[in-house]
Length: 482
Image (cartoon, rainbow, N blue to C red; front, side):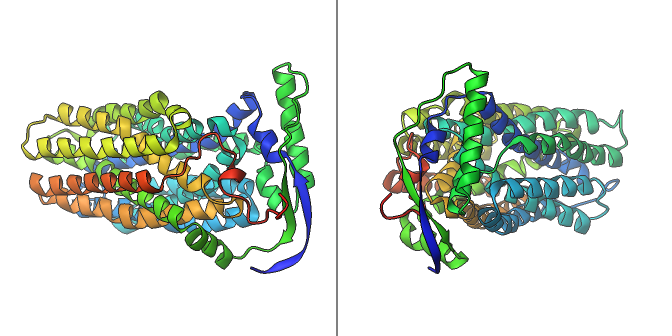
């Protein structure tokens, strides 16, 4: 590891951030950063809901396999975007990158509305994915570094689950935009995509008020800026809540400034020093990616082809599906901070796998109606939503601050690449085969992966609840006397 002439700075900034009482400032952080997931859910749901429309010859005339490949293009972009923007997030800062990635995401989403062929839609969806992949790395890093340790788990899990609030909005919107009594079949789906981009413009202005992560600033030799930001946050909270000056915690850490940490150093830290945590993060991320992407991206096709649901009615079935995903973390998210990470992650992954296996067997025997299938999935994802969100929480909080965004990006990329990119295309192919048996095999594969991930968590899980990030994984730039 290359070293420049360095000095040591002692600071209690991490402890001061973790002891802050919850305030309007924290609500601003979770709103300005977390709302991206709402828009992502809105946009992805619109894409899923219009799948049945896109195979119509009056629109783009895609095949079932092409619909799956478009979803794969989105996920491929997310993988590459996470790696590229994740590396830049650790090098250039959280604030710069969560602005850049949002602009990429919104621009590409708007361009999707002007797709004229399979190739153009694939390309625009690829760019959209690149933006959201970068968002995952930048935003999860910023949130984990700004939110107090005692509520970090539930906050991260609930914020990630707001994706499903977006799916509810998207499902409702498609009932309007895909109604051919209101819009021509080749116009409604375009307006739906474009409207999602327009709604996201307001986020840019909210994010102007989110500061750079003081933890990131400390490790980049900018202790003065970090001190100023934290002091301003403290004063804002004291004023808004009419509190006396907050006590200064007696918990200090020494950070060496002027230390250069290269890309190879980051990889060695993640895959050598923390190899067990790396395998844990990969297992959780890959299994939930296959589980979610395989089922969700192609469920509208299952509804239209197997249950004969009209494309303009698909949104009605996605709403209870989304409600289950949203209500689960809101209901059980706090247990990840009280019962603990290890127990809750093992439990939610196990239950998700078992419930999917049971539902797959019912689907194979044609024992479920379209409503029954949807309610079964809603019950499964009531549990699975917290499990999936915990994968992002785990990959973000168990590695040092200098590698946080890149670690999350790597495991998101590897997990999604292996478990997610191929899943929509695979399930699209299975759906197009017209065989319930084939689709059931796909569902059972997802079930098995979740159960295996639960076993890995039980063996290698990290008890990170209520611990400061620097205790979970000391910064690479921490001085020996810290």
